[in-house]
Image (cartoon, rainbow, N blue to C red; front, side, top):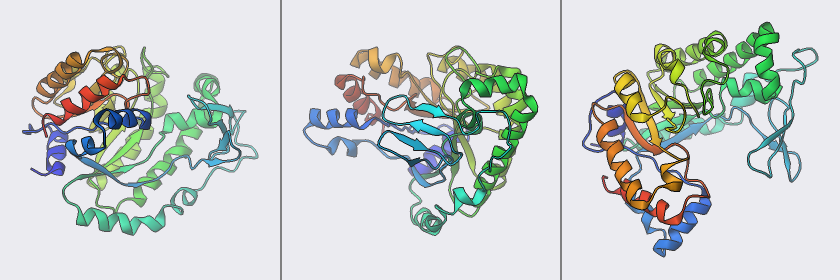
Length: 340
């Protein structure tokens, strides 16, 4: 089977002889792995299953100084520290008065010249699963524009304004997806952090009121094109799992096992025939704190248990972070490469 056939079979809940995987890591970790092996040949032991074929930036951030940048909505961010810090939201008040909302063309015009090249490359490469990327999601954009606390308050104190903000953003996202209709990719990958470690940030009811209908519109357009939907969310989304299945999400990426209700094997038992899981290897537990033997054992268990009946792509919940011990990163490389 080609890598593409393996990934698509898993996303369609069909078992495969090989479990597809992705092993992203921060550059500093990759550099240490290269030093450990005395060269970069280790990269060739890892099979590439998916490839990014095209992307539409949903923030279009530009630097304004050595330390700061501004996004397309007008918010100002400090970029020289982790995590990035929102210093000045584009809309400090819950009003659109005097504010010019970005047009769809501002997102699409810069990437339009690369579209034909993406189509050509996909048609020439049928080995890999091709994924279009779309970056930050609708809920995240609301707080990028308003500030985190302001956005949460809006859902209670200014629900009409918040609903309009979500609606305007949704129109943009549907337009971005529509622009990709003639790109013969296999899937579109979104990101929208709905959860924190404890549960859904907005709470299930407000998420259902404001965010669920928005993504339902976007997902409908993706499926109309015959593409699959992969979406990232950090944290716990266990409370809204029936909802994200209902609106058509094909694969949930990250599956952070440390968050409440996100134990991979329990998710598989309850929802594994309805949605695929992508990730599941603990970036706050197993990867930084496990021994190399424990890491190898967990990778094998995930392949064995999560791969039953299909519906699984193996990956760390987050790219390997700088605090990952070198010996653990090496154990992951070797464990992932075991089954190629």
